[in-house]
Every structure is written in C-alpha cells, then in structure tokens.
Length: 475
Image (tube, rainbow, N blue to C red; front, side):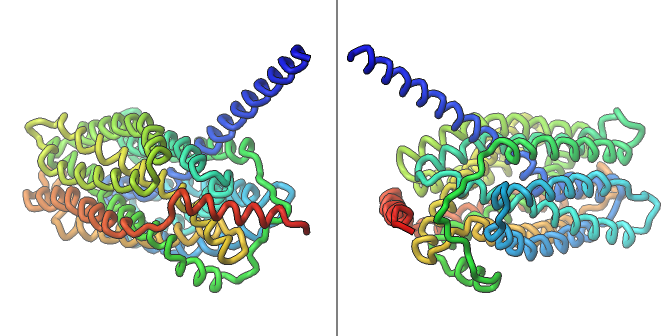
C-alpha cells in the first residue's frame, strides 16, 4: 500500500513538473511575440523617421505629418480588427489566422518602404511614405491586436497575469535594442552608402519579424471555452461600452499620456546625443546612443521579474506608482546628466527611464486582463480583442499626435539638416528641455490619475468566483 502511495505521489510530482515546464515554454513563446509587436509599433517611427529626415533630407515636419496621418488611420482600423478578432470562429481559434496574415503583409511592406528614389521631390517622398505606412500599419494591426488579446485570455489568475506579462517585459526591451541599432548600421560604412544600408537593414528586419512572430502563433495554445459568450454588439456599441468602463479609463489614460511623452521623447533622443552630448558627430553620437540604450534595456530585462514580484507581493497599483515615479525622476535627471563634458553619464537617466517604461506596460497589460473580467461580469461577453483594440486606438492616436508634435518641435526648435554638425545653440537647448520635461510632466499626471484605479486582488477574486460559477452552470 505504501509502495502504491509512493508511486502515486511520484507520478503526481512528475505531472506537476511537466505541467510547470509546459507553462514556462508557453509563456516564453508568448513573450517572444513582444519583439515583433514592438518592432511593428516603433520601427517606422524611429528608423523610418531618421532615414527620411537625415539620410534623404526630407523636412522633419513633413515626415512627422506623414507618419501621424498613417497612425491615425491605424487607430481607426484597430477597433475593426479587435471586434473581428473577438467574433472570429476558426479551427485555429480567434487570434492566430489574423496574426499570420498580418505579419507576412507587414514584413513585405516594410522591406519595400526604403526603396525610395533619393532624387524625388520632398512631396513625392512624402506621398510614398504616407501610402506605404498606411499599408504597413494596417497589416501590423492584424498581428498586434490579436496578439495582445491572446495574452489577456491566457489565464484567469490575478497574479499569474503579472507573471505572464513579465515574460513579455523581459523580451520587449530587445525591440528597443534592435531598433536603436538599425540607423547606426546604415551609417557604419559596411554598405556603399546609407540609403543602400537602409534597404538591406529593412529586408533583415522583415525576415526577423516573420521568424519571431511565428513562435507565439505556433506554440502558444489556443484557449477554448465551451460556454464563452462572444460579443454580438456592433463596433459603435462596443466602443461606447468600452470607453465608459471607469476601471479601464483609470488604467488607460495615464499609460497613454506616458506613451505619448515617450514617443515624443524618442524623436529627440538621437538629436540630443548627437548634437549636444557628442557635439555634432553623427556616427559617434548615434553609436553611443544605441550603446547606452542597449545597456539600459538589458537592465530592463533583468528587472522585469523584480517588478512582477513587487506586484504580486503588494499590488499592481502600488508597483505602478513606483515605476511612474522612476520615469519622472529619470527624465528630469537627463537635463543635468547628458553633457559633452561627461558623456558617459548619459547612461544614468536611461537606467531609470527604460526599466520604468518596460514595467509600466507590463503592469498595464496585466491590469487590462483584470478589466476584461470586470467587463464580462457587467456585459456577459468576453472582449479581450475589443479592449486591446480600443487601448491601441487611443494609444496610436496619441502616438500620432506625439510624432506630429515632435516633428513640429524639432522644426520650431531650429533643426536644419543643411547645418550638419553645426546646429544652433537655441536648437540644442530646446531639444534638451523638451527631452527632459515632457515625460516628467506625463509621469506626474499619470501618478495623479492612477491613484484612482479601483481594481484590487480581492475584487478580482470575487469576480472570478462569479464567472466560474457561471461556467459551471448546466447548459
């Protein structure tokens, strides 16, 4: 009898280990999808922006306008894809067919975007950029919105959601690492000229997008619930119900404000490093900027599990308040620490800002999964795609405005590509102030708004009991 009990215990232990291993592999597969998601959201705005303004010499305000228009279209397309994804019924689930079509389309368009003729007029380059990016972001949305929803529906456990998003947060900084090195590669002398470099780099990015995106598509299990109530409302009704969810708004608003400031700040990062810290040396400034960004993002990857642990030991709200404070402090410190006298100190602000940014969005996505539970109690439908789409819609609209304003900010600040390394003191001072102050103000606003976030661990446990009881009811 004792032998039987021992064997049973051994089998149970083995099954538990196998189950835990599968869970780790599935979470890792999901986390890997954060890299193509990030590239799809950021590469055109940063790499594309630099290529069109610096390499091709297009007016930055014109480039900013083209990118802003395409992101506004992208924002409009988000709710359509989100609603489509929630209602889709296929043998492969609600998410994966859209993700597959989206990633192949986006990769093809991205690889084509930099085969622009340098002799074209600025208006022709602008038209080419705008049409290409509208197509690119449309396909990108078809991957990104279902991918986000895949994470929201992965688990019902309050703390397990933070752990899942920690895997995503560990991988997400690789996006920044990749993107920050794309433009320096075009300037490195490996290629015959920077434009040729941009074309080869874009093709490499397209291949990387496909390879990494296939990992969550192939290896994250499709979650099926027999009694899952799919939404029947149209897009306008879905939008109304979603944006009137107060818990969702208290989560979304501060994160979107922060995201806008980060997108604005990102446009100035290269300029502050090149024209202030390294006094106009484009090759050295862009390479050092990429190096600093690489180091800070490695630190971000290492700290992601720490912030996830903080959220599980305290609460997601407490952890979010801490990382918003880090963002504010790090951003303000850049004005003092990014100087040509001591260029290596420029790494210090990044060691605060980049881990904070990674943690903010890790916690944000974990919280939206909780909001989906609350919404299911109130509406009777499971709408992960809709929440991800509306969040993406607001985020991308904000990002479009931020990109547009950053282009105008560079122009009004006095940036002149014809001056090369000899940019004016007025432009350098304006860039430093905008780079430091705008994210800090966003962080303070985020702290004020987020203090009202209402969802706690205890509330989610009560909601889960109600939802589980509903699933246990006979059909």
